[in-house]
Amino acid sequence: MRLENKRAIVTGGGSGFGEGIVRKFIAEGAKVLIADRDQANGERVAAACGAAFIGVDVADPSGVKAMFAAAETRLGGLDILVNNAGIGHLPQPLEDLAEDEFDGIVAVNIRSIYLAAKAVVPRFKAQRKGVILNMASTAGVSPRPRLCWYNASKGWVITATRAMAVELAPFGIRVVALNPVAGETPLLKTFMGEDTPEMRAKFLATIPIGRFSTPEDLGNAASYLCSDEASMITGVAMEVDGGRCI
Image 1 (cartoon, rainbow, N blue to C red):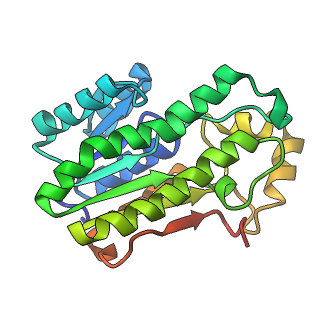
Image 2 (cartoon, rainbow, N blue to C red):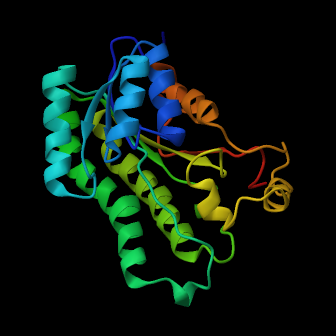
Image 3 (tube, helix red, strand yellow):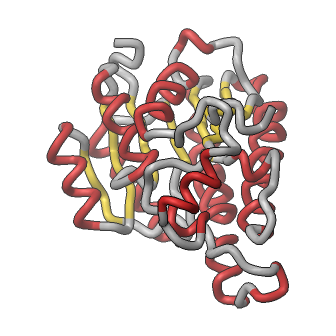
């Protein structure tokens, strides 16, 4: 029960790594609000584990405002914000990515963290405590070819995490990140281009432990970093990658 009485928002909590984090947080005693634009999956996870749900687009200022208002009314406040929502793009030469796809990556992977920070930091400063966890990626540490703009967006998340941590530490606010390798999530096919046994074998050959990250792996890491046990840890981007970045 390392998160007992903690109140958390998990964006993109309706599937993949976000779902793993929601389930682990609930198991550890937290109250959780899932914020996801996928209504069906968000409601599915909420019903399965006893979380609350709000359907929002976290790249839209009005959606972010509604998300934090819901945290106040349905959770009674907030202690933890998990910026997990993210999108990728199919492998391709960097010059071929369409502008609207690039804009989408910036909106979800970058803008949403900026908007959430503008809303939550004043709250956390006022209460002199809070944890922000951003979902980055091994792609921001060891970029893969043909995923240039996704790689770059996750490099931004890592740098933003470190910069936020330095600035907010005097206010009792910790900011951390997780760097998963590709996992059994809806984004896996996006990263590989096609989901075939051959492509999986090629991808797994780059991971020393020999398997993909799972939602449970990320839930376990997130629950520790967001708990009081990690009170001396800020500014880190923890690799949950089976040795991929060594």
